[in-house]
Length: 574
Image (cartoon, rainbow, N blue to C red):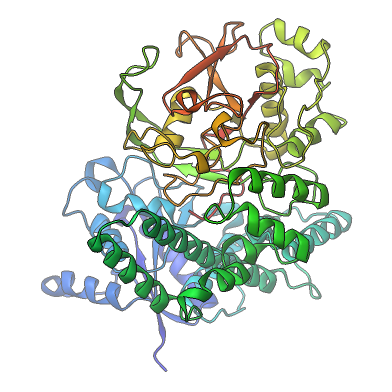
């Protein structure tokens, strides 16, 4: 049997780190590892490198302070750039060895920018052996490489602090709960954190559970891709009027059937898909009634907005099991993050005087897939260190104290999976401060520019799903729902980054002042809101439309979602 091949791409100045990685990975992985430091004839250098790269099963990119040196990486003939570009073009599985926690920067050339979406494992000198184990586990998973349990070099320092038995037991229970509920991405995060702390056990094999969790997470991601492909073809089919477009749809179904052989007949697509695809894979422990309601909620082809909203309300009563809607096992809001990459975009419109058309550049950020739900905000209200903790209100204008003393406004539409309504800007900011402390990540409201880019992508579309308004794809007054609706009941494959409910449902608070986006956002001035609501018409649902209120204002039309500028602690596959 041909041995598996691992190709290591690195900058010459990172030779020491690359060699240390190679030596440790050689003890852990049953694979041949190629680095170009071995004697290669100068005349054969280029062909040898490309031959080994093409034959590799996994490409490992060593990320250090030198790897993406701007003076070199933007040269078309730079070897690191060429190796990464070739690996991406060949669709090779790519892993990142992030030395000292460094990830690839945002300002990469277009032909290698996709490397930023690859999974990386952070390696620090004091925990290098643990980091190598996690990296080897990831490489073994994505490359189908046998994983060996040989000990790492004893010269490597050991982790000094091991968690207490009670802490380990609590984390075991949490991890098993995550695995049982199908939240594999969070399980991977918890397992990696546990192993990084130096945990070892003769009776509970965290390493093997990590391998299983990674495999299940990746399988779930593949099924999610199948979901997106299926939804895109359905959308194409809906719009296909000419014979040319109908032929494209037929070709797309044929390709889909080849790539997904479990789908044998076109008439069986929907039934089979609902059994094995996308979100259904993750929701393993759901009842028949939950499944029936999910089928209605997420099917805009056969159910109108009022029918889907009614299904959402019924699902709230018996429990909405979708990720990103409720709480994690530890009681913290369970958030799904959508990455919005750095780059230029088209904002504004000539139709809106307060938001003129312009092209700007926005740094990378992550935004929640859905608005914060009633259930998620309620966890902030119910927490012992939550709403009434003065720490979360510090740094805001003095009026924030008045807002807190006014007390909590009741949710108007009391369905757990609906957006939280009746919330002021100050309360939304206090929630962000509380959640930042819980997740140890700086979380805040999006600026209006961030919000608009997440809704419109880079093409300046009028609505999040396209340029033509469709009543079936938004909760506004035209849809006839007459109240807020469960988040996520308007799925559409054309959403630029997968961010949902950006058209109607609730106006969403943004960070900045309405009249001056550069001014201190923590002033008492009116704040911007975006997205329209269930009570307003399509004019206000336009992605360039703006609204404003005093930050102390609360009513049933207003909600919010949150962003982070750094990689979230548990990001979705993207």
